[in-house]
View (tube, rainbow over the protein chains, first blue to last red):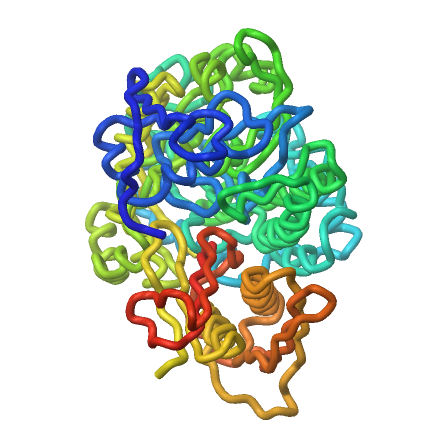
Amino acid sequence: MGGAWQGPLEEAGICRWRLPQNYKRGMRVPGLIYADRGLLEEIRSDQAPEQVANVACLPGIVGYSLAMPDIHWGYGFPIGGVAATDARDGVLSPGGVGFDINCGMHLLGTNLRLKDVADRLEALMDRLYGTIPSGVGATGPIKLKPAELDEVLARGASWAARRLGADQDELECMEERGCLAAADPDRVSARAKSRGRDQLGTLGSGNHFLELQVVEEVFDSRAARTFGLEQGMLLIMIHSGSRGLGHQVCTDYLEIMDRATARYGITLPDRQLACAPVDSPEGRDYFAAMAAAANFGWANRYCLGQLARQALAQALGQSPERLGIRLVYDIGHNIVKPEEHLVEGKPRRVWVHRKGATRAFAAGHPEVPAAYREVGQPVLVPGDMGTSSYVLVGTQVAMEETFGSTCHGAGRRLSRAEAKRTVRGEELRRRLEAQGVVVRARSMAGLAEEAPEAYKDVSHVVEVAEAAGLSRRVARLRPVGVMKG
Amino acid sequence: MNTGYRLLEHTADIRLLAYGPSFEAMLQAAGRGLLEIMGAHTTSTPRARLRPVVLKARDREGLVVAWLNELVYLAAVEGPPAGCGVSAVREEDGQHRLDGWVGPSCPDVRPGVEVKAATYHGLRVRTPEDRPASRIPPGTWWTEVVLDI
């Protein structure tokens, strides 16, 4: 385990590399990695391509085992992996979603410009940091009774909007309107519920963050205008997920799937890919529980967004409405869902696993909010805290090749230990502040782990995604305030 | 020392290598490593304050994952235990059964890592008869496990 990957990759078009089906016994389809030569060198430095080959062994996988340009070594699936399995003969694999079910992004726009708050950035970040619970084991401001938690699991963001007295219309700007109807709280264990009960409205730790950002550059003025983005505009970007509840749902169902894999006679190269047929009791139960955790994730990000609005409004002494704070979009990047796609020219129902990959539906797709449908679905791609994040838009090429998927971030380049050896947290904080980025973090070691040098260049990643046709750049966002758990 | 643990490189997560003169000691070392990653100061605990843990799995690898995930769960809902141990592992009804214990929650947790779960990815459990890992004392059991963080 570990070390550089030496297997075969054949150039298969612009920024496309094919991993032949005969590379490994048991592969049912080839692999396809989207990268240029520069990214490919980094991708080969660990075992992520082997994981692409492993995913190709899943029963019922359709087309290719896909890897987005930000692919890196994960467990089971690579991070940046996408696999669609057939709705009749395919399987569901919790390893294709991961432990942080429906980890994703939430982007809020404002009518503020950086110059409006430039002299109050420190106070703004203090208010956000004081309002939003973050860090290991943090508990949130919303205490849930057991029946209320079940409602969150069943109704997702709409429960949060109702509880917080917020505008239900805004849910239109969330993937699936912030709720998968297939969720069944009874399929979620008591253990998972106990881990999630006090965590609604908490950011978490690790790579989760809240950032104040400014629109630095607009690439596609029509799409930017449609999304309500203008150069110089201040935004709030949140990265979080379903917290401990989602982690435990994955843990519980991996054990169930581990037994099911043997019972259904499925042979896999990695036990973390444990799976069951989509129409088996185990498959149905997993999806019902995963959907419930996904709903918790959407509710969590919605609550975090509401807390951020309140904090900003209080810090500036104005109402959120007057500040024009509104949801631009919310989307997960660790999820599996049934979707219909054209496969070899024919519509086909498939289960799309996205593990560190973002849905990127093209213009005209009915799942894209009506207000955005003419240009396509917004894709939110966080970078690192020192450089940039991006808003992209989905494309027809993504619909045709990747089941409507693109990258989800920069992708790690250094391990956390290497990152800490490279830079100390305090030194990093000083460097970022010298660049005009106000930093608030619970742990300096945690800050160092997330240093910009630990990540690939997000600009390079999104350029490759654009060169491959999987998404188009709409706007580049520059961080001016960073809050880490 | 023929019991202990080390952290190995992994791009996104943590790879934990633990070893000991017996399977039980190896499990205990892995548990202790996990608790320290999560910020616990592991200390000896009076016997009266220990709580029993009983787990079952279909094989040794499954038991490693179940043991570590039990500790992850306890850490998440109560805070990391100040200690843990494995008294015995035996086969029962075609399964591997672990009898162990955890201490009370650690009173002074330092900033640690939020571990989401122990994974099966690349999981290895080796007996003293198997080829030893580099820099592992000969004649020891060892396991390598990826922790999602």
